[in-house]
Image (cartoon, rainbow, N blue to C red):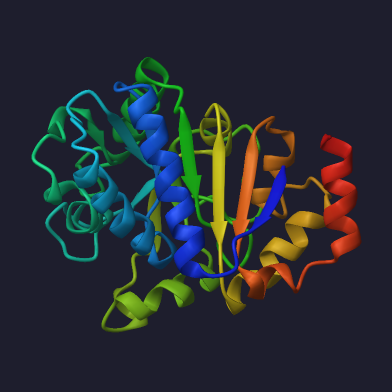
Length: 255
């Protein structure tokens, strides 16, 4: 695990977009693990521009999203289907719809949807790059504290802190779904490379706990210490809150 301080949101987002571009140019049938949320908006903004500038054909690219709210249809404006099409997919006609995988949150058989999604991941994966954000409580995907490190795609109950954090996207906190379909921690860890992006005041504590190095299901993101190729991309605000001795010890251990 390497910690890269890229100073600000703009540079950090550009870096992640460039890494995705490089992967797609290197391997036109790449499998990409994608994330949603406010952290990723600028990543997709820059990626759209880079795709245009490089005239990429995307019809062989396969994408898997981390999660979707239970109960929301794909055309609900708060769904992650709607987010991904608004932020990325609708802007380039060469994305192949059959290669875009996002859990179906309003299916009549939610357990079967989880089983099918996990099987798709196994059949078409592993992801060449999985991008992640991190929740204030250390969750990745919607794997809340206490999630098993062996977990795969399943229905999860969202914690009160996650519901509170996501309520800014809804008219009221009562409108926030209380469950989601999420890739499990074991599902995420199959990716060949992982890039975690964390910026701003509300991510300082989660990244500080991650750098402590204690691997525990209490902090789901701590499983990333067990992955051979993880970059944690932060801004100045997060980086300056970290114990620099611990950062250096972590990176010396890897060198």
